[in-house]
Amino acid sequence: MRKLNLKNYDVKGKVPNSGNPMGPPLDTVMPYHVVDSIVNVMFIRELQLQGAELLKQQMLAMKLENCKEDSIMLEDAEYERIKKAFDTYKGFTRPDVELVKRILEAEEVEQK
Image (cartoon, rainbow, N blue to C red; front, side, top):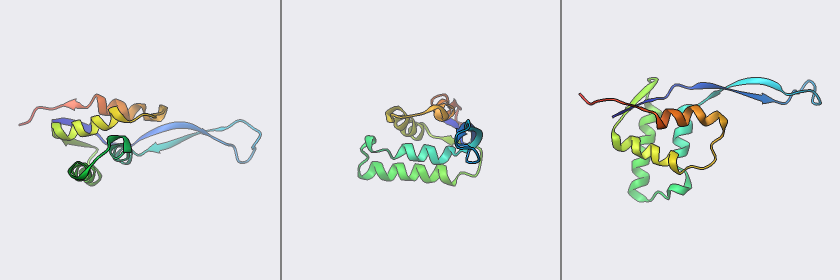
């Protein structure tokens, strides 16, 4: 089993200065929505999900979305579904670094 951290985190960025459009951009901090981001990657077109696979992916997505805790325990097969999606997706950006790290380095936990 794998323990996956689902807690949102903050990302730093820059936004245009609406008070002074010609001035330097302003620093900002925005929340990064972890569960939404994982679910979005799980349904990328490049996975070419068909029939039963799409339904299994949806069940896992609902499990993630319904989790009220900061972390979730995943069966090995569930973790592999998410990892496959992250290995397939192309286009991650700097704010995604923490998310990708959480997926690839998810803690292994022995079943009791």
